[in-house]
Image (tube, rainbow, N blue to C red; front, side):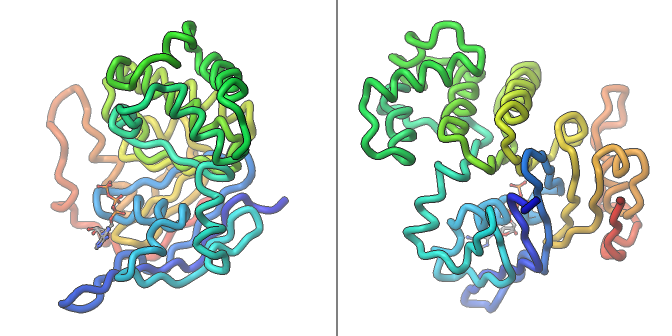
Length: 286
Ligand SMILES: Nc1ncnc2c1ncn2[C@@H]1O[C@H](COP(=O)(O)OP(=O)(O)OP(=O)(O)O)[C@@H](O)[C@H]1O
């Protein structure tokens, strides 16, 4: 079956007055239909820029130099016009962010925001039809009083409620691919765990593919089918989640796993002090 997403040899550099700074050095990554794939790595390793290239957002920056191939649902993104890429965002692919409260425009009520989202797929959808769909979508994320939520502004709702609203909106147009960039990191851990479980159940039911970007290896272990570990713009290890966590072979993956904070003390180890060769060849688990 065709992959939902197939990235090959993706390179990215930013041009500045002092020259080119290379950020991605030829990464390859794919996601099958219905699969949840995690991209993990430290801050600045290139996770968010990868998501922004998939969404077609970095292509608009005049100082971004991009090469390689990104195939989405059988289509080469680089061959699409800006208008075609715009049409894909919020319809065939959508995104959820770290902080749901700031991602939802506080000027409009949730039902107006929902209407806008649904119009991306069906420009002629009426406010009434949108409201019916929005109510059903909110019920799917276990919101028991959808009418009250629809009439509210995001600042009147809790962070956990906004996260559910955002998940419902992101899935309202039945996207093939959901990009989840550190979802819920701005929430407390219990609420984050509940909403991630909700998201996982929903994407499974809808057969949505997910690119899950996270620092949190515990969450990755629970929700991802496969993992790619990225270090300074290079994929250093990849494989099915259990194989990779049970038998990490690349020095950087080992350091990353050792750096998971433990309640029993010792604080967060500093992996920059690790002596392993983080540029060792990539490890692929089958
Ligand atoms: N518009 C830009 N211009 C120049 N450099 C950029 C731009 N956007 C990102 N970068 C650089 O690209 C690198 C990768 O950034 P990216 O945001 O993808 O990291 P990340 O892995 O998502 O980190 P975090 O987990 O902190 O979000 C960083 O060094 C960042 O400074």
